[in-house]
Length: 536
Image 1 (cartoon, rainbow, N blue to C red):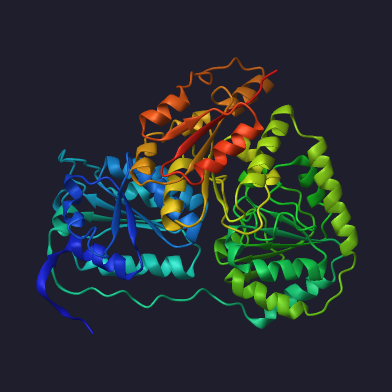
Image 2: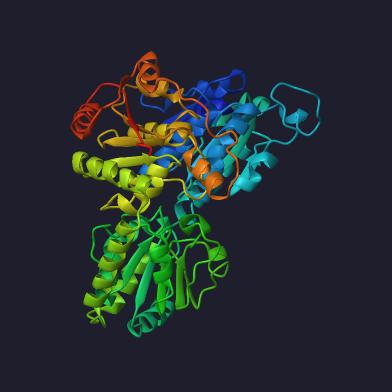
């Protein structure tokens, strides 16, 4: 039942109140003249906390980090025009990695949209900028539109494949008075599969001699059932980067997130039945255009558009992965695997082959990653940027549970790690959170050090310093292309950290590193720890 407000409030304030009722506690952004009516509804007690960032791209990445850490919507609040375009990189990344991110933005006055009058922050039709990066992008033409748009967004987050959403609210609409208290809708549940496709999957899987499971981020809530299925079938498990840790990486049937490795790509064709759960089976996890999947393919995905795209399914189950895998685990019952010991031996052999074939740089990465794994608490969240250290970590850094390893393989934007970590730490303040970044990528969002320092966040920030954009250097060298634009200089990262009110250090040996890292986990502000790759 709708309640009339004793004192009318603006649409901007009503929007913040409704977000709070949907469970939003924090928004990230930079206030501007076009968001003042939103600001009326912020930082009330308890209300929604506003985190001031240094760039809207950082705000978007922080919202993305919140979503990665929790599975719940992260929210960025930005001005019209440049605020939207700055945040759009994070939208693209949330789209690629299936994350529930909500971008709320201002827009020029509704009566100017499409006119090209040259008003402040004008984009002639702002929603068209973000449409290709979102599940939907919409403009509220009146205050009455807002509750319906938010209901649509949160219903999508709850029941469909998570994708980002952008809602623009023009400045004149923000200022409209709202006389009734807006209420959230009851959110729908995700689809549950019927018994028939589960039984069909069971028959295919129990007939397999060399079953394989390929897990993506969409399966993150199905870990217990998936471990049971793998053990019941004696199936080898390969994850995407987003699926890393769903089946623990140290499980004797797990090859972790290793499709980037030729040893694993060659192995995939041996499978006679493949169970792919919550995974796009995308190019960006293997960096090969098409994997050689020769077995019968069972695809389980909440997104019907994935079932028959690049890898058409022999059997399709369109449903929530958690519900589907619980049903499948029960259906398999006490099935005895054909050759679980043989599968475990095959995994051990492939792991040994990977280790034997590492490059000199990868061996250095592996040594640092082993040191980090030894030193960090098991519940640590690792926020990785796009850099060679993190590429190696995809298969070499052990994760025992999901949503602990953040690596944006899909969109592959530089600069996400630090703001992702800020968002994750604010979402899960009791969990240790660590940044892993390359020297080039770190500079994309370096000013967010100030945001982290102001918030007093105990973030260890490990910078792998290898002389700039080394992956592109290596790619140019391998194709006999003269290096162009990839060897720019670095600042003194330790001095830069201190200038931003953070700690900074450059340890000289493993023991100094362990000491610095351990101290950083408990300090009252971030610590930049610089590790230099040794060149021949």
